Image (tube, rainbow, N blue to C red; front, side):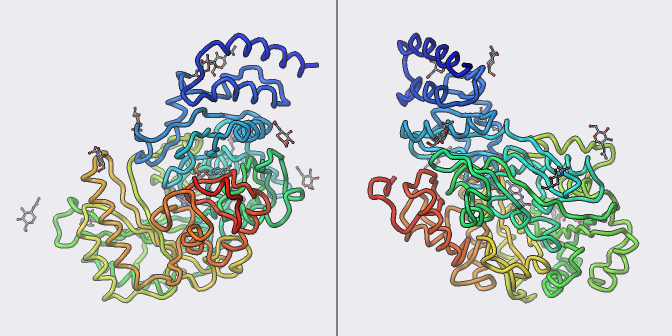
Length: 538
Ligand SMILES: Cc1cc2nc3c(=O)[nH]c(=O)nc-3n(C[C@H](O)[C@H](O)[C@H](O)COP(=O)(O)OP(=O)(O)OC[C@H]3O[C@@H](n4cnc5c(N)ncnc54)[C@H](O)[C@@H]3O)c2cc1C
Ligand SMILES: *[C@@H]1O[C@H](CO)[C@@H](O)[C@H](O)[C@H]1NC(C)=O
Ligand SMILES: *[C@@H]1O[C@H](CO)[C@@H](O)[C@H](O)[C@H]1NC(C)=O
Ligand SMILES: *[C@@H]1O[C@H](CO)[C@@H](O)[C@H](O)[C@H]1NC(C)=O
Ligand SMILES: *[C@@H]1O[C@H](CO)[C@@H](O)[C@H](O)[C@H]1NC(C)=O
Ligand SMILES: *[C@@H]1O[C@H](CO)[C@@H](O)[C@H](O)[C@H]1NC(C)=O
Ligand SMILES: *[C@@H]1O[C@H](CO)[C@@H](O)[C@H](O)[C@H]1NC(C)=O
Ligand SMILES: *[C@@H]1O[C@H](CO)[C@@H](O)[C@H](O)[C@H]1NC(C)=O
Ligand SMILES: *[C@@H]1O[C@H](CO)[C@@H](O)[C@H](O)[C@H]1NC(C)=O
Ligand SMILES: *[C@@H]1O[C@H](CO)[C@@H](O)[C@H](O)[C@H]1NC(C)=O
């Protein structure tokens, strides 16, 4: 009965409003009425769910989670609509109606995509922004949680920490990352040596597919469930919810940060770290961040190395362990801080200054440092010699800024087989590298210089990283790796093998099965081997 009433109201509304101008893409009210008619759950206020370009809140919603300001430019095509679903069926209606009206779809969770693929497109499109679907339901009895994909990692961490002192979740360090993109692309962080990636700890998922059907693990089948845990869900559908496995952590953990300049022996320490960091006990994770510090100290060299660490145990246990495993670092109690696991998230993110509240984790804009940036990634399987490190520093020091982050692998990361999930960077990997250069002001001069820096550093690293293919991490998305447009299977293979090695072929097969018409696409989405001629070139 309710449905007929709603139908009546919308019929009236749209028969009156058709006289008004359609929006610039001519999709205006037809899309709205399609959406309203398709929605099984009565929509009390459609203007809080669909935002067109004349909606006063459109710009703020669009810009709200743009992390890389390079893609906040006024010259970039804007979506016809931003849809902010409040119910899973709204996601289905958005998919069904976009297809009917020939609009592409971009899905946004936390908006941290390095190349802006969750909110930009070259053809008329809509954004499905999951910001209002962010319930987190913790089930302590079973050690699991259902997490809607609009939630940020910070929201998940906060809820876990609020429910328990002895559970955690292995995922990234930045609390504002969205669980939609992050988990579906892998998700590495300080617990990965003990528990693997975020994607390795997914037990179930709910997805809306290209036909607008809503499926869980049992109905989507193991192939699709495999694909969305590391293959990037954007190629396959809209994940609306994950069931994740919580992992045990001790009530107290210990973090430390130790910084060394080149004069203080940073090169030797990094050389040593490469020999041992993947072999430490799994409770110990240490990552160096190598920072160009031009304009800081007036020293002859301009590199600072900051060792950041998390140990799943007390300070009393950590000090003798470090004395045995990495005495060269000279760790002292004053460099360390004992705390709850949930606090360690903020310790790593912003130092967790005294007086800071854990509620900060719920702030979707906390410490976002919005700016312009470019990043790239590599994997290393053989230690780099001191001599070679010295040469790398010289290349890095030619820039005004820039960093490299080296994330230690080994432990659980090495026990999981390359084909278990689409993320293939497992046994034999010593560490992952992220190259990152950020800048605060727009302008071609700066951008050109920064891109030059990152390309030169990346080129100089070629001899020391994986080859054929030179592998990369999907979540550090890099459009330089392959053609910067929706392409063909053989074009996709170029970047696909770098992110996924031979798992790319299984991903392409799954794509052919679940989305043969290539409805879910972007500049780096999986392409089936054979796709219908009429959807081929975009
Ligand atoms: C400051 C910063 C810190 C980071 N730290 C880490 C880190 O510690 N570890 C790490 O592994 N990575 C890290 N990353 C990379 C991060 O994991 C990726 O950028 C990730 O894709 C972000 O997810 P998101 O939901 O925030 O992004 P979005 O931009 O919303 O989405 C990224 C991609 O996933 C798709 N997508 C999003 N939600 C869904 C969904 N529900 N269904 C289907 N497709 C979806 C989007 O369409 C897009 O293609 C960091 C990034 C930044 C900017
Ligand atoms: C946007 O939607 C409102 C109703 O929600 C409508 O009045 C207006 O004409 C629409 N604008 C465009 C450009 O479609
Ligand atoms: C409908 O939602 C819009 C946007 O959220 C809001 O401005 C408006 O007041 C709401 N109208 C009603 C009747 O609730
Ligand atoms: C994004 O661009 C708009 C102009 O289109 C501007 O008003 C806004 O301040 C920009 N956002 C940020 C965070 O700089
Ligand atoms: C979308 O389409 C699918 C497949 O036809 C159908 O099962 C579903 O009910 C539709 N849902 C909505 C909300 O439009
Ligand atoms: C734990 O899991 C079982 C089996 O799935 C379920 O029946 C039970 O309700 C769960 N416990 C809680 C507290 O949700
Ligand atoms: C959980 O949050 C509530 C307030 O929302 C607070 O009173 C309580 O102390 C928190 N519990 C823990 C263990 O953090
Ligand atoms: C500056 O030099 C001092 C002493 O060598 C060192 O402790 C500090 O970390 C350096 N700072 C930077 C930014 O290089
Ligand atoms: C840096 O050191 C050089 C040489 O010692 C000196 O000439 C210069 O003035 C110093 N610059 C600053 C900013 O201290
Ligand atoms: C940057 O360069 C592009 C292409 O060369 C040009 O179109 C644009 O106007 C430039 N923008 C600025 C701010 O200089």
